Length: 334
Image 1 (cartoon, rainbow, N blue to C red):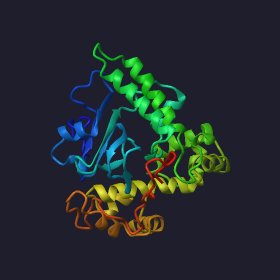
Image 2 (image 1 turned 60 degrees about the vertical axis):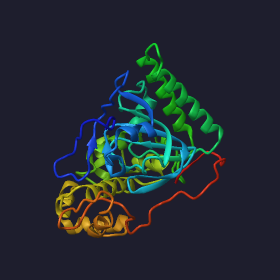
Image 3 (image 1 turned 135 degrees about the vertical axis):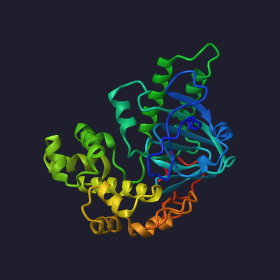
Image 4 (image 1 turned 120 degrees about the horizontal axis):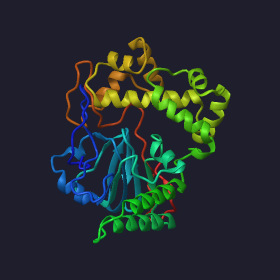
């Protein structure tokens, strides 16, 4: 999607477009530094205001205006000092053009300087999406790092790929030090065990939901995996597995035309009824009702089993960040 402006990588049967990284005038491959106003200026067909996904990362520091930005069924209030990090594969919807503006950085997962720490950050599909920095010292540091990144990106004599990679890595490491949402534990405390589990979960969530299978594949006991997972996320292994499956189910129900039975099979359920019970247990609503509740976001009519894409709230109420003043200390959105 130019990033946005690039090729549509929509999968067969999908009701949501996917975009590859293809900025129109990037001096260095793999990264673009722009702002929301410029982005909306070159994507005028309403694509950004409809649900879509991208295969690259995007960071946004809001500098003016107020609106809501929706990512994976959560509406995040945006105002000056809001920091958003949307990761590859997450589905999102931008507010209307002109509602907010701010620095907008897009980059491929491979672009940051490769270190164990940056690899952890770019591979973490479950990391925090939104933080409210207000006018705190954390905001000042974040803004300064973004400013330095932009200065190098737009350097009249030409920008250095190596410097951009190092500056981006420094920015990501700084963001990782900011407060995490709510009771979310420190992801680093899970160490290598949790990092390996998270990678295996991404590979295998559609084929097995048994904690024992993950333990066997990784060479740990279930107890060891649970200890690492609780330290990193506050969840047990089974809770983490089920949460990932439930999220993917929501994405597929909201953003594809596939019948519920097909989605059930794709996620490893032998019977649609078992999938329905699982989905209701974890989301508080049936697959059909959830799909219907999401049908307005893209104007898509959907499969006859029930219409897809999202707009409103699933039966479980949408999470919203409590209001806070612009000079509140740095804290996450949720």
